[in-house]
Amino acid sequence: MLMPRILQKNLLRTLLDVTLIIALISLRLLEMSTSNCVENAVVDCSTSSFDTELVSKIIMGLKCGKAADIDGLSNEHLSFCHPILSVILSRLFDLILSNRYIPLGFKRSYIVRIPKPKDTRTKAMTCYDFRGIAISSAISKVFEYCFLECFHSLLVTEKKQFDFKKGISCSHAIYTVREFVDRHCTH
Image 1 (cartoon, rainbow, N blue to C red):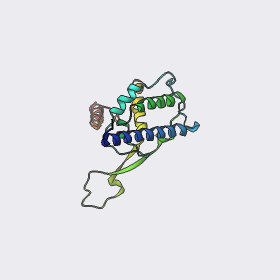
Image 2: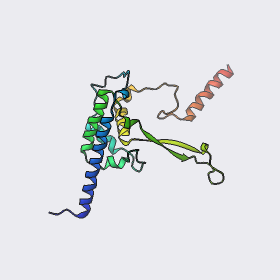
Image 3: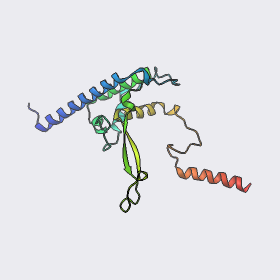
Image 4: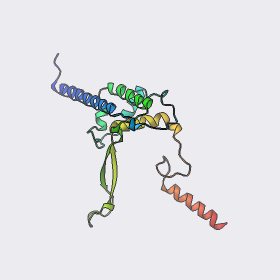
């Protein structure tokens, strides 16, 4: 039985995506060097592992429509790829943990300038009118999310930290400062 032409194109595209991703993973494995060693790790990573289900769940949870990474891979490449990718990535992540090496490709990113939402139409733009965001590797994001999922109980922050903390905002910091000032100025 012959496959319809559209299915042939989709199958070919999927196979090309899998081949591309496997090639990129192989290159990243080769990039591992002794200079990238994660020293003084507190957690015994040799007993921890990322299972295929976790990697699959993380990949399916990636937001679509984001910019491609420095290698040209986007979240859509990972989401719509063959399911064997989760097996390959879980093995790669286990190798990273057991060898305590971070591939060079995970450390590379590029900066995109985004204009701040100010009065950009009426005045000339300066370097202060932009903010930069770093576009990291899509596979390194999957590794990061898997790592956070597995080790979130070990990653605690200081109670007095207000930046980059879930459920805490600038208003909490302002409230804390006001309470401190009011308490110490009235007494």
